Amino acid sequence: MSKSDLETLLAFQMKSIGLPDFEREYKFHPDRKWRFDFFRDGWGIEVNGGGWNGGGHNRNPIEMGKDYEKYNAAQEMGIRVLLYTGEQVKDLSALAQIERIFK
Image (spheres, rainbow, N blue to C red):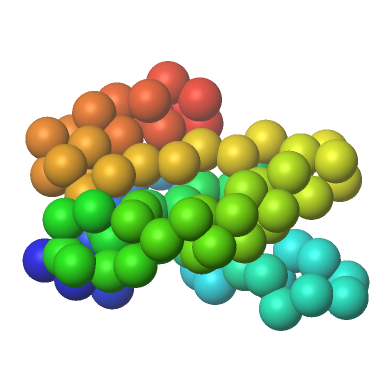
């Protein structure tokens, strides 16, 4: 399952339990092109499917460093960050935590 498929699945899950709409592909930084898959009320949500679909972020230390830079910058700006694997989306544990936070 691709990262895009996982994002679509999580969006469907959130909508199916009546969570409010999240902004998709939210550009949060004024100078960088960084985006969150989902954003609402100061929370950025990322689905990292790379470990399951052959993507490079979870294996390549350079790409991991770029991700950490992004997440740390968001934290510095006061944005709380939630990170989920594809398995957490599929087994509904991501949804359960998001529901606890936003309902």
